[in-house]
Length: 167
Image (tube, rainbow, N blue to C red; front, top):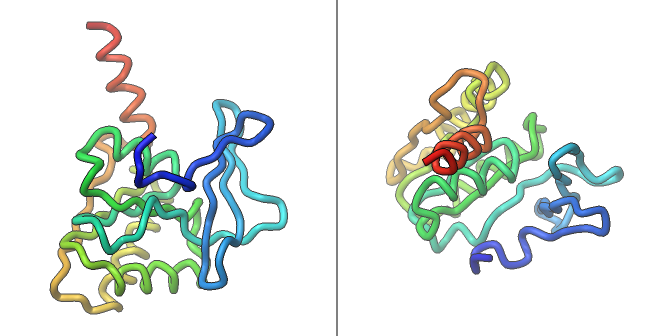
């Protein structure tokens, strides 16, 4: 339980991890996740899940799902990472939220950490387009996607844990 996740990850009565999404109007929906279930709030709207205020980190990491963002943080130096996810395909509103998040970001690097598949390729291109549209020359954009085609960052974490368990 790290301070940057306080209030950003909850557990519901069914044991699902709940990742709240925000938009310009505030709380707008939430991702739900457990071992056998992936979903989004029935009447919710996808916004952005954010680990904390992006003003206090060096790198802003964009992933497709919140679980991928947390997996990425577990595999990297989490203290300097701001995590953001959008819960799958980007809506026009989410693209605007992505741009405004990049505009406000006070760190040094924006990282595209989408899944290594066709959907992730498309989302990476959309994140790159948003970054370019913002025009922040003080920021560096890099892609850090899972090493194997078809994987997301949760797959990478599970494989690393399996290797550690085998040792």
